Length: 135
Image 1 (cartoon, helix red, strand yellow):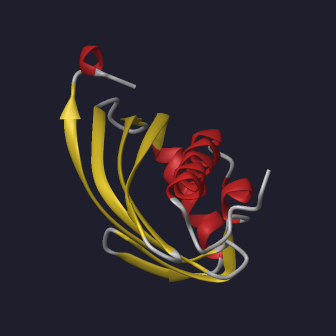
Image 2: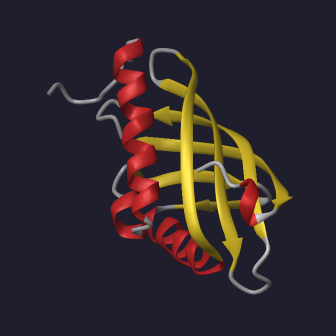
């Protein structure tokens, strides 16, 4: 298979989105971090941080709190080296037991080797009952 590097076609963009979904659903912070540049810049809601070490730390903490995490990403748009996705994921709060569905958008920018150098994410959490889960 061809490397998933810019410039993106619709097919390559869809494959990048699926690869990201699969990696995040593994809930393996080290595996996920390898898709990003060593100095990748992140905005995740109200948090800003840089680098793979910070990504691993963030994801480790995230998945401690967000139990039964399941994610679905959808390609929204793409250009030469950028992809935007819409996503939703469901999870149970490890402290309270409350279920949530999170809806949001991500904007990604890639370097010439196909590593994500910028990730900008916005999302909203909606309380749901366990019986309302879709994923």
